[in-house]
Amino acid sequence: MTTTIEPEQRLHAAYARHEHDPHDLANVREICDTLIALTREDELLPWADRALALGAQHPDFLAMRAFALDLQGRHAEAVETRVHDPSMSSDPALSRLRLGYSLMMAGDLERAIPCLDEARQPSASATPRIVATAGHLLGEAMLKSADTRGFAHWLKRNESGDAASYRPVGISEWADESDLRDRRVLIAHQLGFGDNFLLAACVADWRAAGATVMITCDPQAHALMEASLPECEVVSAERPSALHGALPDAVRLRVEAFAPHLYATLLHLPLLSAAQQPSAFRFRPYIRAPHAKQQIAAEWARQLRAQHPGKRLVGLFWDCYQRHLPHVGSAMRCWAMRRSLPLGAVNRIVTDSFLSDRIQFVNLHHPVTEALAGAPAGDVDRYLPGIHFFDDTAACIGELDAVVAVDSAVANLAAMMGKPTCVLLNTSGDWRWGSQGTTSPWVEGVTVLRQRHEGDWGPVVENAATWLATL
Image 1 (tube, helix red, strand yellow):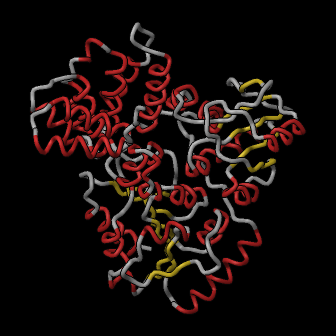
Image 2: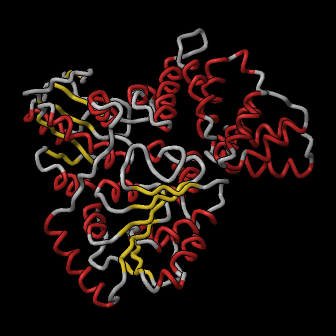
Image 3: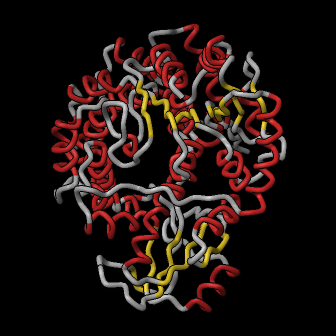
């Protein structure tokens, strides 16, 4: 009878063998492979370095090293590792794709764009997955540089497997038709909450073109999107888990009753708007909380302002929940970690005597994430009616004077409500916040404060304090 050894046990055994023989390259390789199997690639770097120090200049170890560096935000070092990868000549499409990604995340858009453009070209080594992934990353790089043509390339996420989506049977996919008069269009949601809040701003342009719209959304955002898109039929549906997945039965029945002529995904939405106004396209505020929730929030705010007369109310959001979830994989976990503000940096803001005399801060985290985010040292209030769904968050934000948030759904929500919003970014922030300066080319009224060095939040926090002082 054969006994299967669990990866965790195999890893501990390999660690023990390494203690006895640190020069055994095969054992180092097993450690690396097991860490990858456990989605713990963020622990790879010292082991890849160990293998390379032992003389194993194998493309696999160079790729591991570069991937681990990218996870840590050390993108310039990842670029240098990838440039010296011998597989650049043996597997050019994949190598150009990986190099282009590292260049883009390092902020070197001038080199990233042609590199990704080359990777997406048909060739012997370019699989459909590589072509699609290179295309969608090319789109992100172009959007980072404020080029509206990037939206057409970004749509390739629907083919790369990176963006799960619903695909209704028997309904044609929208294909650049600008005339949507008398057309019923189903828009299927995908991606994260922040993407949903941002991209749904384009629904107004589809309706202006003559479309009647049904849009699906996550249950947590259903009441909010229903209030924000009153002229659309908004349908609650669990987030799709597979590429081109079938609609849930309850949703399918609603869709059949709607009888759409066309369907589109969220990724399609900016294409119509960007084509009509390529140099002036912006995502414009449209979100509002349900009226009943607005009334509850107004009473809460009245009482809070009475307790703190003369003070501004400012919402704070600093912790991305995914960083606490081992099962989501190293890429998502590390990206959430890099976007999150350490509690010590939050304390620097809320304990500033000048600010605390003039501002009452409000914690915008959901209660589930609030415990993981930690309690700030200063006087920070909570939204006492309770944050259960996103319509509660929106109702609270609607009564605030401003919001300070890391790159998150809350930052997108506040921006799409037209609330003065200060977004705190790591060195490789998302495309929607642009790549330089203190403004976004895509969202007006947002102040963007960027790290100069990965992990160094000090100057960002100082600039945030200055921004708050001017409220």
